[in-house]
Amino acid sequence: MVDVDKAIRMAVRTGKVILGSKRTIQLVKHGKVKLAIVASNCPAEIKNDLEYYCKLSNVPVYIYDGTSWDLGAVCGKPFMVAAMAIIDPGDSEILKLVKGENNGVE
Image 1 (tube, rainbow, N blue to C red):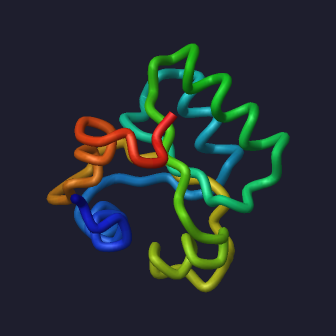
Image 2: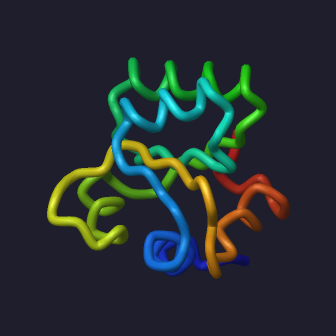
């Protein structure tokens, strides 16, 4: 099983990620995202929009098992991150979250 926090940290450090729900939704609409990650306490409206556009664009969604403060901390940021997009995972094994077990993935 992939350590989610470690994988996110590695993706932020070595890959290309976008933080923030507005930009994540925008990039998902264009199909440029390999994985969308949403905090468990993300507002329902944003979460529903993101899941809808991810389904249309065939982009997997991972529901992070923590708050937006937790997700921000894992990304090394001093602010909340409700949603983030993985464009390039870098050295991270984050994409194994969606290829292996569907643990939290819809």
